[in-house]
Structures are given as C-alpha cells and as structure tokens.
Length: 301
Image (cartoon, rainbow, N blue to C red; front, side, top):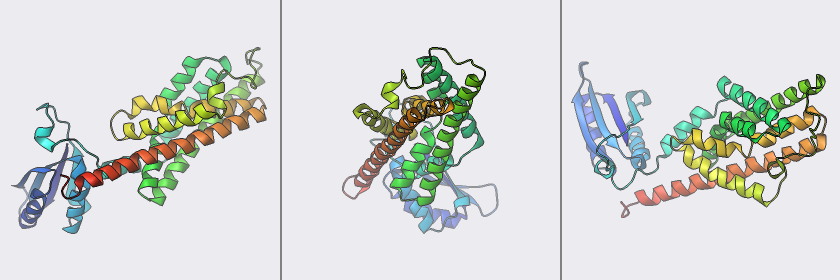
C-alpha cells in the first residue's frame, strides 16, 4: 500500500480530492486543515497499480513535485490486504523507476563493494574454494545497476540505461582489476599455490559458454527483476552474481598470471551473461507493465 500526501491551498486540494476519490485503487481520501494559514493536506491510500494514474492526475492539476509525497506504507493489520487495496498489491512503474534512478549512479560504496567482491572471489578461484566464491557473490551489489538498466530499456530512457550500464561496467572492471592485482602480488612474492593452474579451473561451468550459461543467466535475470521490485534484492543478489562475479574474478586472475586465452574465455562468458540478464530482466518488466495496463483498462477493474 502507498500513502499520498499533498500540500496546498484548501480549495485546490478539495478539487484534487474529488478527482482522486473517483479513481479505482484510491481509498480514504481526506483533506485536513494544516497549521499554516490557508494551507491544507490531502491524504489518500493508493494501491501500487493506481500510482501512475494518480501521479498523472496530479501533474494534470499542476501540482508541483515539491508539494506531494508518495511513500510505501507497511500494513501491519488487518492481515487481509484486500480491505485496504483491492484484490492485489499490483505493479507501480513509478516505484520501480524511482528505485532504478537511485541505483544507476556509480556511488563510491558500490565501487568499494565490487572491489572487495573481486578480492574475495580471486582468492576463491586461486584456492579453489567455493565458499569464498559464494561470499564474494553475497558482497557484490551488481544486481542493482543491472535491474536499473532493464528499467531504462523498457521505459525507453536512454540516459538511465547509459548511466546504469556505465555503473555496471565500472563495477565489474573494478572486480576484475582487483582480482588481477591480488593475483599479481601473490605471484610476485611466490605465494600462489604450487598446484594452481590458470588454464584448469574448477569453475569450468561458469567460465565457459555453453547452453547452461545462457539458461542460468536468463533465469537469474527474471529473479533479479522480481526481487528488485520488492525487498528481496539483497538475498536474490547472490543468485544474480553467480553469473558475473566468478567470470570477473577468473578474468582478473587469468590476466594476473598472463593466461590471456583463459582470460578472454572468462570475458566472453561475462559478456554473454550480462546480455542474457538484461534480456530476461527487461522482458520480465515489460510483461508486468503490460499486465498492469490491461488490469487498469476500463472493464477490467
């Protein structure tokens, strides 16, 4: 459930309340006098599926973006959400777009986490330790720019898509770079395990392109997009990183010891995985958007 608050002149908000009260998916519309003179507050509960139409109505009424707040409300009781919002929570494009914009920028924290993931994954590749690889996946936040790019593609927002892809590329490059640096330093001081061979990897299934590579990445893209729209992104992020972090680490480790052919193989896997993630994530979002439009169409409410 979403909660809408609009601030403005009482007469203007009364007109807005009349418009919103007649919309499907909008409940409990109230106009309350505020403490400031000649100011009122409009309150309303909005189902996510109706959020885009509500914002379009506010824009038509020339309500400024600084004069309203649309926030998610965690409903504790009653347990039956239908009492508040209808048959289902639905899909809110405006919410997904907001999340995408927030995660498309190459923030310093994102870069640090990707670098740390690269170091951990590199040690996992060198020591052939799957636990370290899984740990690196848990650290990596690459799900966020991947999903932001999907939102940009589906929404035809070139700037958002470009920004997200740049952030993703920078993050994966940092992971590979740190993996390569760690490997080079260990090799320089002759600390690499004597049995280590860059051309023979226990991660063969994740560093060589085959049918499973594409299927795993396509499945991960669906899970990524669905998780991005909820609060499960942190947990599902581990599954998404299985398609990116091992390949990035293998790329860096291979280049760190001069195994160029093996590094190019890992780079190929990384490219295929990212392309499949973007394709299936975008398709998932497009299907949801289409379903939401059909549900909100006249005669289907």
